[in-house]
Image 1: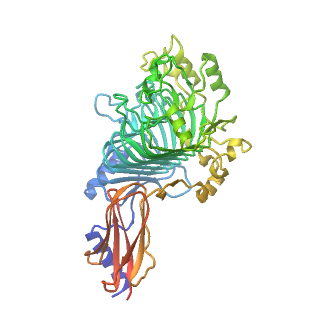
Image 2: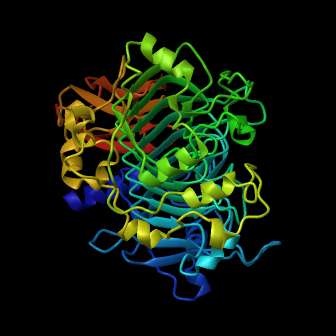
Image 3: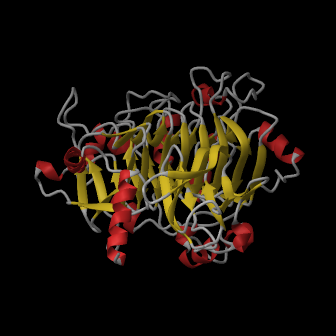
Length: 566
C-alpha cells in the first residue's frame, strides 16, 4: 500500500473516531465593505449554518490592516471554542468595531457584548475590538456594557496580543464559574463612560462572584479606567463573598491613569496561591484614600477593616480574609505624576495603602516583605493619555459630581477623561520609561518592572529565562495551555513514555486506539491536578503498527500517532 493511501485511510478513520490532530480549518473573514453579509456576526452565522455548527478546529482569521464591524452578539455554547486571530504578516492588527444593532428599544446603540460564552470557550490573538464605532467619537454617548461575557459555567477565555477599548462597563466579565481566564500582551483601555453608566463601572475584568480556577494577567497594560482594573466582589452580600480565584498570577503589568473608584485590584475570595509581582502603577489609584467618602468605601465591605468613623478602609488591593492563601507579592513599583500629586494635595488625600491589613499581615507571616513589596519611583512614561484629574476634580466638586456614584449632571465634552481610540492604543501608546530608572532592573531576574512589551529586547530575553518562571509548590511550573507531547521513544518496543500538560485541574482521559478506532488501552481516567504529567505505556500485548493516543478533557481533545515495531 502506498504512503499516500495510508495517510488518507488514517485521516478518514480519525474523523470517524472523533479524533483531532490539531489541523486548523481557517476561514478568512472579509473586511466590512458596506454589505450586510460582511458584518463579522453575519459571516460567523453564514459559516456555522453551512457547516451545521461551529467546527471544532475552525479559526476565523482577520486580514492585517482590516477594519471590521459587528452588530450582534455572537454566542458560543458549551463544548465549542471560538477562535479569532490576525493573519500572519507585517501589517497592523485588524480592528473590529461594534456597530449599532438596529434592533430593540435602542437600535442606534451597539450590542451589549461582542461575544457571550454560554459555557463555550474563546481564544483571541492579535486583534483589536472597540465598543463603538470610534471614527465617529460622539457615538460614545451610546456605548454599551462590555465586550466579552459568560452566562454559563465551564468557559475559558484566552487572550494574547489583543487591544480592547471603550466600554461603559468592563471588557471581560465572567458571570459564571470559569475554568481559565488568561490575558497576555493585551491592552485594556478606556474603561467607563458616564454617558450610559456610573462611576462603579469601568473595569478591565469583572469576575463578579464567580469561581475562577486559573486567572493569569501577564504583560498587559491597563490605561484609563474609572473604577478597578480587576473586580471580584459580591456587592449584594459582601460577607457571603465570592467564589475563589484558586490560582492567580498578576505579573509584569502596567497600570496607568485609573481613578480607582472602588479599588485597584479587588480580588474577592482567593484560593491556594496569589502572585502579584513585577507590576508598575503610574497614577493608578488617582482618587487616593478618602476616609470620608461613603460612596467609594461601600465596596470594601468584605475586608472587615474600618476607619474610626466606621466606614470601610480604602486600599488598592484587598480580599476577603482567609488563613490558607499563599501570597507572593514583590518587586512592585508605583509612580505619581506632578498632576496626580497636585490633585491629591489639593484635596488633602493620601496616596493610600497598596495592601489591606490582612494581606499585609499574611505576607509577613509567610516570610514576605510587605514593606518593600511596593516601592515608589520617579519616572515618566513616554506617550500616554493625560491623568484623569479633570474628571476627578469634577467628582469632588459641590457643583459637579458631589461625590456620588450615579451622576445626572455630567457633561462629556467638559468633564470626561482623556478618552482616546483604538488606533491610538495600537499605533501611538508607549508606556516605556527611561532605562536609567531604578525600575528598569528591579523585576525578578533584573528585568524592567511593568509590561515588558514596551521593552521588546528585554521581553525576548525574559521569555527564555528560567529564572523568571513562577513555580507552584508541589506542582512545578504551571503550563499555560493544554498539550500532549510526542511519545518517547518513537518508534518503540514495547514500552514508551507519554507526557501531557494541564493549565488547570481537570478531568482527564488518556486512551490508545488502533487504526480502526478500537480502544486498546486506557491509561488515565480521572481528575488530575494542573501541571505536567507522564505515563508509561507498555504495548507488549499489541501487534506492530501505528496507534493513536488521545488526551480528552472538558475543554478539548488532542491526539498523536505513535509506532510500535517488534
